[in-house]
Length: 222
Image (cartoon, rainbow, N blue to C red; front, side, top):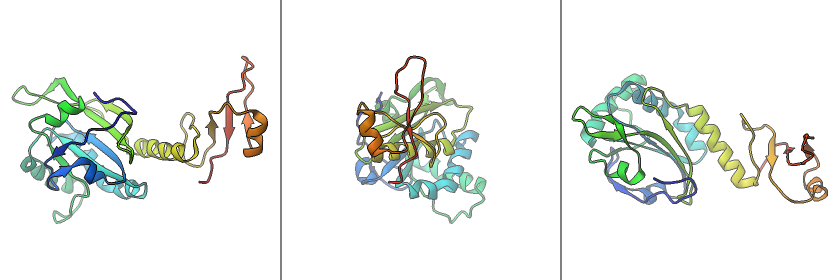
């Protein structure tokens, strides 16, 4: 299993877009990697249809999207027809992200996503529904798992990407339920006098402990 902060594996795989060498495919982009347990399932079909509709939002953030399921390329291509239909798209539309073929479970084993209580009709274990966000340095920055019955929230995933990219640029932190443009937090041991010079709008919340660590500033523009 890969932990947040560790390098994501540079795997090779076949996909609906042809053979993929992961690092070469990513280039210098961020990446949203979604593992799916199987084709022709209702929840996953809604997600991949939704990915088409939100593709431009990921593109604006320099995020490439890739998915994986425990099925062959031929099976993926049959499923894609359903995905396009559910998204009310013409069958001639080109899917904007690859679906990796992992029918032998090699990638699921490498990523540690094999789930013992989810099996196909042959009794073979399938992959869990993991969400990975990977930065341009190929490090895993975010990881979550969704149950089979519950679809992912792409608005929340976009919010996480916004927060990761902002905190990388500005070395700040984002509080509960933060959205772009809202107040952010400072995590710094620099003296308050120096902070006030750099951040004239600094606010420090008084707390019963007397510790002055709740430092808030407006979101930096850059």
